Length: 307
Length: 264
Image (cartoon, rainbow over all chains, first blue to last red; front, side, top):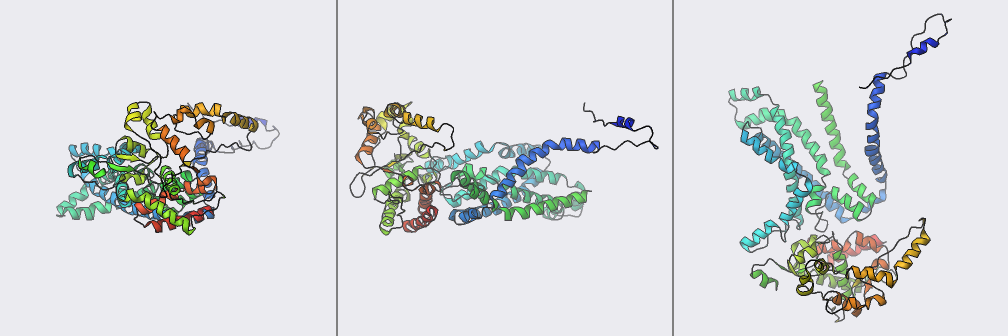
């Protein structure tokens, strides 16, 4: 059991007896609760400094190299990559969240079989990235993948180049990203739907509201805050989604399906240009910072309302 | 050959010829094509020559020749995004009849466990002659040995390298690799091990190395060319043609611009 630290009250004995008024015990330099607070905070501060403040500070310092910006902006592949990232975020995130919104309605239904199905539905999110995405890569391989082999066996024609045509490649990346993360966001929204008071639906039913009206006037107003916060959060996370791109196409063919996350790694480690790698990620800051500010504002507002 | 085999139900391609940015093989192979067409992009004095009209013309001819099987769908579609070992995997899985590979890694992969494949079922041949009818020089990948200036034991390191780089010590190590790496010392290359006609692969490599005047990679002449390799500019240029559908002239001109910038 932890013992609270004791402070030297005995020091009052050292006060000369000739003193006119008895001295009060000197308050400790630091309140004991604060001392314990700092003591327990210390490991976190160490971890924060070593693994958050130092790497970010070092990255910011590297990102001050203006020549590195000139190098990446001069590379035609960078602009293609920035465009891919925008498409990936706009299509991938929005499609995923809209699907999650509607699927959450299905998975929130009180039915045992739907609960069991929900457990299977969660599997893509639960299994590790490498085996799951690599198996999709093998399935979609144009040369000997299961899909194109089946197409050749059935119709004697070559199937589409799923991963080696840039448009199909990026679409496949978006599809895999959605497949991988849709279950998680669906379950978050299912939890949100579960928290909506049943009375509201009962009242709407008494008023004769249709399913669309119930969604519009009951579900959406109750779920909107969670949906928007989740969308912002997943946009931030998706910006750094390295696995879906790297494991599926490797950024190819000819670097046409890279996003900023994979291109930064390519610059830093394949081309040994570390500064270019860092500034590639920093170039996403104009998207990232407004999102983080909006998110923290929303969360602090929500916190204020709860208080 | 490809259509005939496909008509029999084999999903097979004529030649496995990579054009990706995720492997160094296309970089190697493109330089062999450049050799065949006499396109010397960097002169031995280190000067970048690719923008010279005659060299540009030869580069375009070489690249046209390189992409011909890819554009005519005689190469597996995934070859535009092959990684380092994918050409080996594709050939060993009998997905293409011929593979253009800069080393003997494909037959070597069969030597230990499938000796029939190595001796009976596979053949290695030197590069075809160039359009001028002369043997095509292959590339010699010069490996550098670095000793750091501030190392504690520079003299010992130099002394070790001097000892290691003798035919007596280097030879057994290279032989143990079965020809995966090739000796450049005349005393070693003339060893019967490398020219044994009973070995269909090593003897072909021996003919390649001894019958044509081989060339080092351009970074040996100008170290800035290493950036061209790191940035995979040749692979990106091939991608412009095979993936984006650009003309060879346009893709080569973009390559020339970028190469000139990168090496300046």
